[in-house]
Image (tube, rainbow, N blue to C red; front, side, top):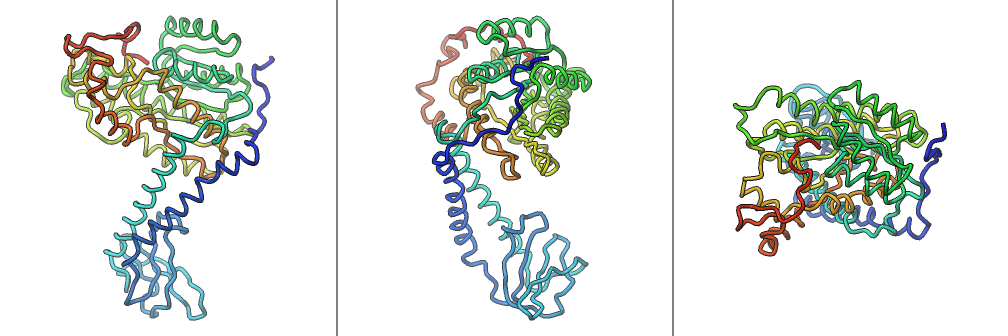
Length: 432
């Protein structure tokens, strides 16, 4: 059959000038890291036993240092925390000593903890610089793909998923969508096809079923030819707010199956598809309330289903290394969708939060999608995997709270029993 976008050729890079400008943030991050390193280690150098220490789980380029020789008594000793020793053999070369029981002579646990804190500071600083770049870099400067992308989005029959599908389509991409209910999916397909003919298809079903997720992969490949981007966005919550002890076990299973297992099934299916493609691909898992580790009282199962996403990301980055497939997280902040309002229409405290922090799905999608497309264009090297693209950063949250007085009744009239001041069509249902 004739695929709508049949050429899985590698993405063209931006022009030489744009490519050079785009890469400027990397030396800036490196320079800033050196400054942080110099400050953090100002008083950390050894003045007694001269050894080199490292953490077993830290990159060598960040953890190694060189000091003169130590006595032979230190050879072969590691402590139980995984702190090792490099010994100068006398000829100027350093060699790693194997692990055994005992304590490291000249390397205190306090020094190891200081080194760990130093590494954490560097990673945090790098994250902030990278977040600033991806958030504010102009589209032309950061570079976007010069051919249409083929995109699969689960949970995209309405809400944020539908807004993301429309944002991709408006940029010339091809999209395969999914929704739990057939009627909702058909309505969304009709809406999108009227605006973007021959560029969108879909399949209805539950992503908590692994067989159905594999079917999404097969149908998407039939329609698109290949898949560049797979977004695991499907999520559900309770129909009403309730205590954990009063929650029906079937609701617990439904939330966990869709939100957590659905992401695992989708990621596995996407990986198997993309691994066989010459261009690889990018997988994006959408975070939610609880992903930051904060409490989600009366929505325990939802928070528990989103909390593991960071650990999943770190694990898959290591597993997928060298495969040509990259995996990332997307944090959409607070989208004004049925998922955020499920069981909370009369919760005045939550409605006040929504007035300050929430945005329309289209606003969030039009911010996230260009950044996701630029990330696809940036390459598939080891350093290009494991990103987290955020709509709400700590700085933007602080600013919104600071200007909360101008947002009091933005979405809900707090002085009139929380009456919505916008079109609430479709928001009374909890599925996304």
